[in-house]
Each structure stands twice: as structure tokens, then as C-alpha cells.
Length: 158
Image (cartoon, rainbow, N blue to C red; front, side, top):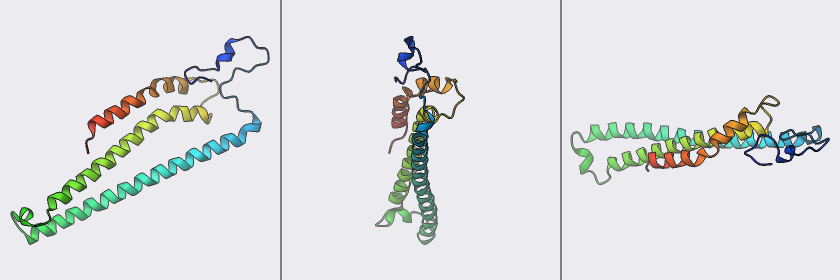
């Protein structure tokens, strides 16, 4: 079955008794649907949990950095930041890099989600029977995945 047509190609033939239904899962294949849905749910939970852990780490690092910068400024007023052997500017740059990486990872995840949501809707049969809107949106967004990655790569520099 090709991904760019709404029905299997063999449906063009006049084969009696051959149902032209995309996917055509029978009642005996419900275990396949259950396995697919649970696998996708598990992957979604893993990805969201990982991104949340990174986001919490960036937020706590940012908060710690601000507190450390205030303490350092109180101890060395004026130009004390540049006189120290370890530079608080280096810590600031690393914090900014970490934040940029987090944002870039979230945007990549958003691009993949936008691209793959329509094939997932089709695969799990979450659309109305006979409606072809997920197929047409898949035809639009699947080729755009490369463009999304290219745009993100150009925009976010680490």
C-alpha cells in the first residue's frame, strides 16, 4: 500500500469480493491495534518525560545562576566579575547554551509531532470511517519534515 494514495492500488482493478478499505483491520487483528496504541503511548510518555526533565534542569540552573550572580555582585561590586579567576560570564554562556538546546529540542519535537500526527491518526483509526482528511494532511506535511528540520537548524545556533 503506497502512502500517497487514499486507497490500495489494487482497488483500481475490478476484483469481486475484494474490499477497498484502507487499513482494513478485521476483528481478529485487534491485538495489533492494542500493541500499536500502547507502543505509541509509551514512546510519547518517554519523550515528554525526558523533555520535562531537561526543562526542569534548565529552570533550576537558571535560578541558581541568578542567585549566584547576585551573591557574586554583592561580594565584588562594580567590575569584580572580570577580576576573578573563574568567570561568571562563562557560567552565563553555558546557561544560555543549555537554554538554546532545550528550545531547539522542543521545536524539533514539535516539528516531528506535526509531521507524524496524521499517519498516527490513520494507523490507529482515530478518524471517521471513509474520511480522507488525515491522508491529505499527511501528503502535505510528510514532505515538509525536511524543510522543518532545515529551518530549525538554520534558526537555532548553539
